[in-house]
Image (cartoon, rainbow, N blue to C red):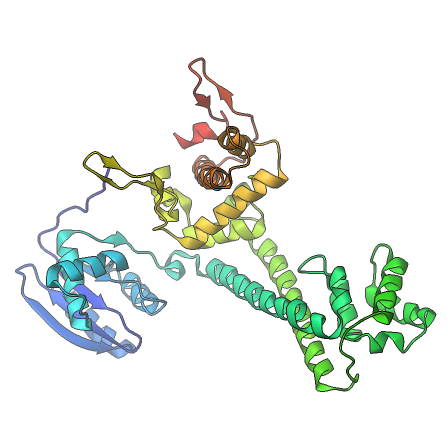
Length: 428
């Protein structure tokens, strides 16, 4: 059921069209009289606006469209001064603007006017500021980790698809994971075969052993590395050439980013070791430290959602169906919610399905694909359904303050699947 905002007749509505340096503001009093003006993105202008709003002596509601990160300082400023701040959906704003003006034309004053119109109709959303509610540090940790992963992956692809094929193509067989640290160290010291075969095998073994560190089958690895270097078809370059210098630079950058990821993981574990919600989420199959951190960073306190459908809608995992007359389309997830939450629940579902065989998520997936296990489209739908189940279970566990306890689903006499008594009952 749609939760309507309580009707308040005597209040001041403030619509802010957010920009990077200058904002357009519409202020409407209870009589409907509207004043529009621009303010710069500086404290003096906002203090002046705040004093003007306080002088009315009426409740004030401020509406704005979240724009990149430009709206966050404004949201924090007004929330910290006791004002009510509401968000306007970008999609709703665009569709309403086209409907009202019968044109795709837009400008700042038109956007502010449409925001004010939507506020008068009560078509706004709750808008929270992570720093104000105390979750900003988790968002910064999560997003910084993701940015480092993207940079590391880009350099890793450069090493695998550019440097190795040209200068040492045979060494690719040793790359067995994105954090093969011993391979990084070996490439940093021996990026091209000429640096390896300048030594005898015994000399190379003595030099390479401390570089490899505590690696299983060290002697065999060194022997294989040396043999491949002797037979390499890579382009011969001088050890002091710019090619070798750039290759080493990329390898060192990859190693540095790997170390940053390890350091951040330790920091995350130390920061959230006493967080009960974090520990509850980690007890769910498929959810590790990074996924749990992302859920906390993006959703904040899950208890703020009244029931599971609100949380699924926030994640964009709720079902939507197009229907007109007797024609009815297929139900599919809306994808209108938080994309990062949707992605991590998808990853958690895959982890639960393929790494933890005895749990409710695996059995749900297997029930979906039982009729046609080779159908890739059915598998995709099953993974989506499992991701939604993971989200529901996480929400239920947090609401009930309980850890996950695996129990295989049973069936009622009528044939309907009965959920896990420990987990599914928490969702009611």
